[in-house]
Figure 1 (cartoon, one colour):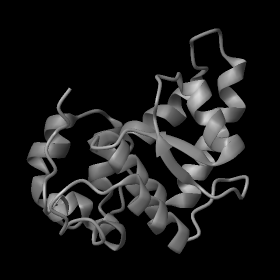
Figure 2: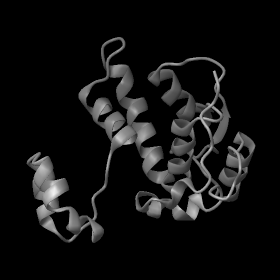
Figure 3: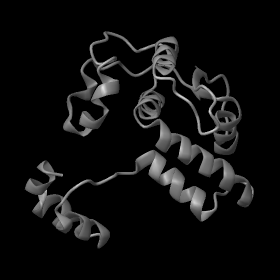
Figure 4: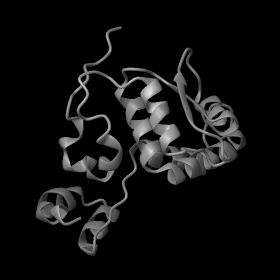
Length: 168
């Protein structure tokens, strides 16, 4: 399978503003960063999991389920990663930018995943996984945005209130 193309300047969107201290190391590249370059960055920043083990991005050589994946990170610090893959690249960026949050999510998933039925996450592990994969932290002094999101008034939150997002 042909890997997706690398996009130089991928971080120009304002959505990546919070990652600028990390993305600045990769935005000017003409090709995908190697796992070695991610590991060098991890070494420079002393990236650790919640058990204090150094995080190492290693090639993912086989498919693994979430429980095996999370437990490997917690027990060894080794994170299976697909090269030339946006999902895994962004996962590495988030680990580099927010190591304590990612470490806490990993520890929570490790503690909760074994408690569920075979192949099923319990509600806490499910919530942690959903936040990890697609969560959003909204920082704003405008309570109207949060109220509309909480009420699931999507049009009011995203369309009617769109000018307010520039300040959030």
